[in-house]
Amino acid sequence: MFLCLALPAAAVAAPTTGTLRLSTGARGAPVYIDGVLAGVAPLPGPWTLPPGDHTVELRPKGKAPVSARFAVSAGQEAAIELLPAATPEVTESLDAAAAGRTRVIYSGPGFSLATAGYVTAGVGVASGALAVLFGLQAESKAEEARGLDKSNPAFSRATELALIDDADRAAFLANLTMGVGIVAGVAGLSMVFLASDGPLGGLSVAPAPGGAVVGGRF
Image (cartoon, rainbow, N blue to C red):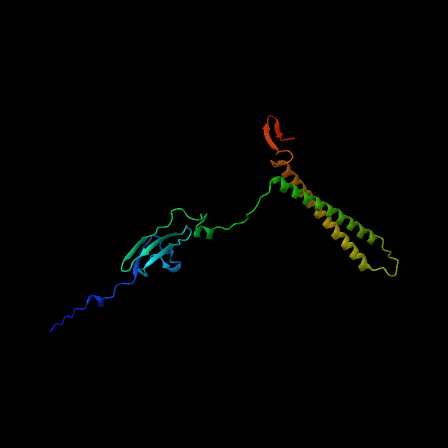
C-alpha cells in the first residue's frame, strides 16, 4: 500500500543562505572572500554565503589584484567573473628560468679610462717609492756587513752572512718593486692619454704618407 503524506507549507524551511559561483582564468591565483583566503583558482563551487554584501578579490602573482563587490540574497546565486589585469603590476626583467641562468657580476657606478689610468699611475709611483726604500735598506745592510771587524774576537761569521742575506733580499725587492712601478706608470699614463676624458682628449693615430699622424686635444 502506498501512503502519501502532505506537509503544510509552513513546515518547509525557507533558505537562509545564498551562493557564489566564481569564474576566472588566473589558474593558481589566491582568492579572498571578505578578506579571508578561500583557496586558489579555480575554486570549487558554488560557495555558500550569508545574505548581504560581500567582496571577492583575486591576487595573481606579478599582476595587480582585482576585486568585486556583490550582494547575496537568500536562495539566490551570484555569478562573478574576475579576470587579471593585462598589464603586470611590477614588470619583471627576467622570468624564473632566465633568472636562474643569470649571474650579476657587478652592479654600481663605473669609472672612466682616465680614472683607471690615474689609479694605475699612482700604483706605479707607490711602487717606485717602495723600491727606493728597499734600495736604501739593501745598501745599509751591505754597509753594515762590510763594516764588521773580522779581527774582533766577538766577530761572528753567522752575523755577517745574515746581514748579506738581508742586503740581497732587500735588493731583490727593490728591483721587483721598481719593475712593477715602471710597468704600472707606463700603463697608467698610456690610459690617461688615450682616454677621451683625459687631459689630451684622447690620442688618435692615423696613417699618413711616409709614417703616421698622432692627434689629440692640447
